Length: 259
Ligand code: NI
Image 1 (cartoon, rainbow, N blue to C red):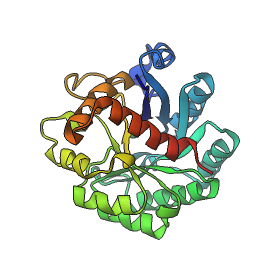
Image 2: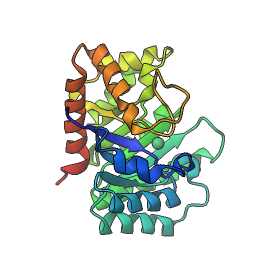
Image 3: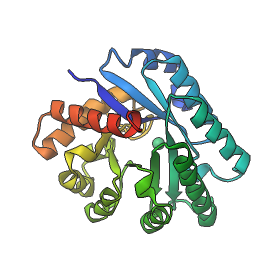
Image 4: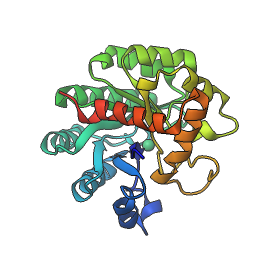
């Protein structure tokens, strides 16, 4: 069996404090390799780089999540730049974006740091991992203004319509699909998977969150990606092995084989 390329996990989360080392060192044997541990704050970005240097199968993304941008400064951005430039195992800037689900931080602040981190990605020649929730139009507008089509990347944990997916695909972006696709109430996301070309889908857990059926509600980990691959296979009418192979090629093309 081809190993699954896990493109989005958060093993720095305190939910893994008791068994993180064990879990990460066992992933390859469990059929999951490589993994990208994605930063969401300055501290989790540092931890992601640390994991990437200690575990063969782990790569890092560094960036500040829209819900964590309060208090971020240009010197933090300098630190992210240093991480990206000095460490070959940093393969993306993320997760960055907009999250309008909560009133704080303010939208102008979120927009400012989304744009600044897209500019950073362009400067260091890395793709971006975008978190976008309840802010579709602003996300698309800011991406266009920053010429994101020249930067490249993915929309992680995609939650918008199939029609909107078209706009992101046209910019050359990939779409991350995780546990939500297995939920009973996720009709819209299943329609997204139906329309997505096989060469633009990425597998991701976003663990410890978003555990798929039949383990929904438990602490998620990357080995549950088998359930996600099986659901996508069912929707696309192909084998799970084909989904695993295609998403692996996609993730390799986007994150590991850039010029
Ligand atoms: Ni995430």
